[in-house]
Image (cartoon, rainbow, N blue to C red; front, side):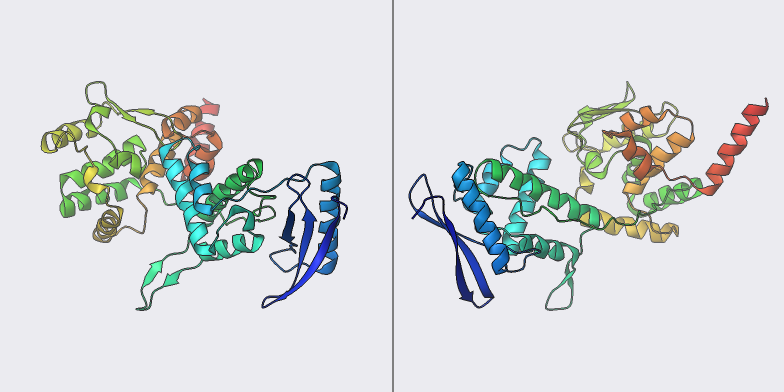
Length: 362
């Protein structure tokens, strides 16, 4: 038989009628077989199988056919993730690939289909209830789903280059654009209530923690991972190491703020090797305390991350240059700062227009 010939073989399984492409590998002389694939995870029709067989014949004649290498999903995950820069990014990518392999029962990269991607996305979007009726897994946000699919897409792009897969199964997957969420910005009166309730319920450290996030615009992980050597109380600066953008970020403290004295007092009460806010690394426990503080202060729901948004918004409305705000916030792109962190209320717009008219008429 001609080595450049590929033919279609029909099989009947429990899933239905499937078609397999058979051809002889010109390099090894061994017979190869691959199931023809339809669209959207469906079984291929005879017409689709013949089209794929014709494409394979063309590849064999031109010598562009790739002999796919076998590799277990676990080995492929380890090989792929060890080349990712940034410890946090590498760990998250590994968790995503392992979760995908476990949920979809993936054994090899070459056997992953578009249907597996769809099943994984459905799993991410769905809440899981255990046998006792308790929520065991909440649904992921659209942004988290998109991020996990980006990890998979990048992995399969490299799998193709390394010869572990013939095509990227994430190709063609699209996610509806989510409606932009309106985030809450803390008012001045609300800030006073929040600080008062935090101190009343959980002491001076919680009050300092809230003030710190408002004034330094630190992310929760950055604040809880901070060590005392990274806080210069004499030079009035804080250095966040290896941030989300994989760069160190320096933030100046306000000279006339109470935060400096609060940090001095906190340093005298805290073990030097522990960091000022290491006690809040237990996120579930911290969020329980946070909700109790909001209830005591009688403040509508606001997240801990909204403290960062509040500080950034106040700086821009106060006249700080947007490029300076972007650098201090640690954003790689100023569009991120302006789109997701600046929340301008109607009263702010009125005040800005009045200020402009006053300056123009002077």
